[in-house]
Image 1 (cartoon, rainbow, N blue to C red):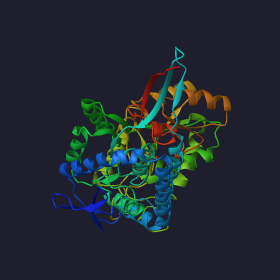
Image 2: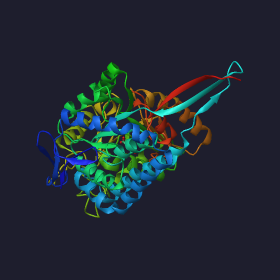
Image 3: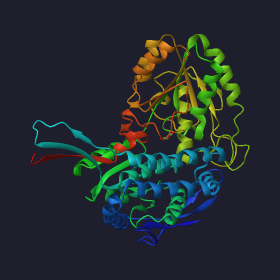
Image 4: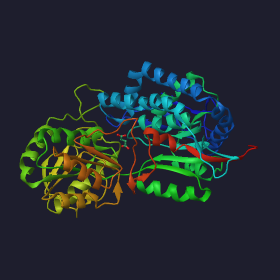
Length: 477
Ligand code: SIN
């Protein structure tokens, strides 16, 4: 597969004439190559998006929604081909790729429906000859910088609300998974959007294209999913032109199991949360806290079930856990296990790179972990579950909150009063109560503290692409 840039409704060669390879992390095989876009290409895409903005923003919400629903149906028609590309480029098992695509496509449907509900307000005035009106308008041209762990869902979670709001957009996909975006844009190309509404700039040099996004005054909003370090840089630089930002950054999710929980359910939950996408999820469980009295039983059940996971190529129907994205990711999992073991942790299962070709790390559980270990402060982004024990509710809440991150958190209990107490005290944007999979299009996804700014999904996800305008009218009344 060869991926070109998509600018102003046309597939284009990059100015450099160069392409970069995309490899399958399970096999090391070449999946294809993508255009190596530059700042100059990004500038052309931004100009196209600027020209298209008056056209797109002045279409009715219903007209925009119809085109978005067309995307939704066409994505469903190409579902299996898209799932296969997702597994080949990203590595996740085919069933997980299908789940991601259902999730990715749900943003088109949800935001197509929400487009018609961008309401304003009439505010009571202080004098009888005045009328005060509040309306909401699209922010303008949006630059979206996306990531490789959910190459389809993180892109549609940005594109769909932008389109619904009336914004035009330039997307820069991650360099490890550019062909997923190319496949998506091949669908958009058939839908009949006005040229320039959607633009794609793949690149192996994120800095170049990112710099154009940051310095080009036509870009009014930057939306980003990725690491907290890069997010901080983008926030700082966006302030130079006071661009709006939405930032979905790193997380360090606590997963708390109280003694009154259904242990089997909690074990299934932690496996889903921790090992989905081989642990390469911003909201995956990073610190598992288990109440002392159930620790042994929990660990036994957990180890038994993790030992049944099957590492392999995601295209093999037997596979339940795929490879990591690159050598750096394998090294980080290894480093976190080694650091924990040196400081007194015990490996209950796994613990090392798998003895097979490809970027595989064994699904791993380590016990007797404490907060002085690297694994408790840095995101592992790999299949390693660290277990700690706790004795009281107050203690575990304090420990769970004691990180600079605040994206997702999870806890398992059957006690209703505790459910409210704990959910309200956890300093996180998302709380999963007996629920390891909280992400849905209709709910706001995002973090507090160093995990981000703004929300994606839900009606809040649309607000982030809108400006508020106040119109004060003096009338002859
Ligand atoms: C993420 O890892 O940031 C996205 C995960 C999700 O939406 O469930």
